[in-house]
Image (cartoon, rainbow, N blue to C red; front, side, top):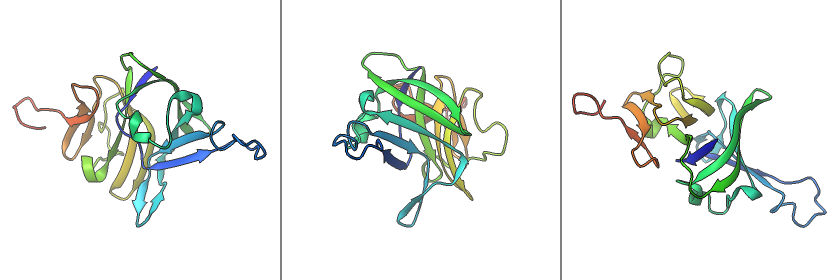
Length: 178
């Protein structure tokens, strides 16, 4: 599956190999993870309503020192898979010229408006949750979108923009914003 990264979640962490006597264990044998989380004061907290994560290995073409360089880029991915009750999406490698099958987007309550996750119809059938952190009315949700998928919030219906690199509000049939 080819996935284009539109945005990441707030929670980043790294894991290295357990062989601490290996001088390359912290860089070449590390993996970098990302998931949805919420900022509470100075801290990032993981309030998993839907637990999951994405993973980058060294061979994926991801540079952990400059994560924003991956935005708008397309990666070959395996998954999403379910392991231990969590969704996992492995980014295998960067691909130069490939049309994406899905888009990884992150929505938040302060930018995209309120979403009622318990109410049916908050998303189209093709939207796949990867990670959702929820506390009261605040949320951050990492989702996989297909080309015709959407999410309904208090501000309207969010879709992938025509350029395939951002999330936009869908234009309503009456010419206004929905």
